[in-house]
Image 1: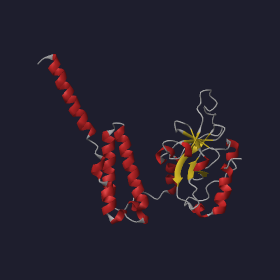
Image 2: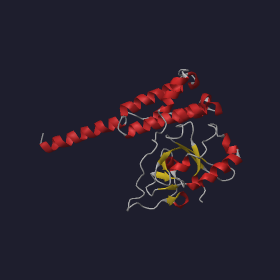
Image 3: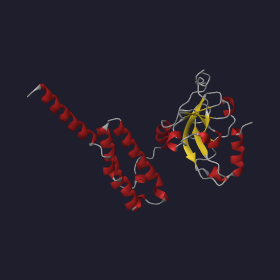
Image 4: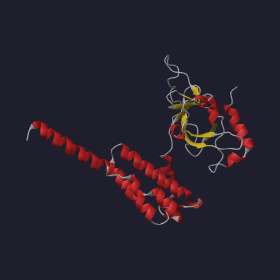
Length: 243
């Protein structure tokens, strides 16, 4: 066989091998959404957290697949299938609350007090943009996980959640921060309309300096009952109004 033919055969074999590897982790085969629709165990508000957890695991499988970690992706899919077919997820796990707190803390953003200022003073730094001036508009997946800085360009934390649909039309970003806030448990509530963003959409900026952040009230409860407290929201929102 000529050298040219050998190269063609090798290329074909390599392509087949790659196709098989890419097909090794078929996320659709887990049929998570079908299970949610068909299984009464996953329907209703009492099981909404279990559904969110399963979807988070599926998103993690997508991430592993996108980085070529097909074996790890398939192992995670196997876990998802077992959770779908197994007993109620609320009955699983242990009851060690201290260990649970330790593990949960690893999920929270960490920012050190006195983090150096960023690059806003660079001579080639592009102007910040108001969120309502962005074209195209901002997606929630561009916000959640993004870093948040004060107006003097110091790290405050990261966006952990978005709240839409309040009766008075005020939408909020929930900012979790290390440093002077208790990470994750004590977040701050920022009106989205008060934020500005870099042109590459990588960092969001508050209209107040880092020192003023220490006077901003933390979110009073994790069940979002503060949404029904107009006095608390008015007092909180006033911190972010332009002078």
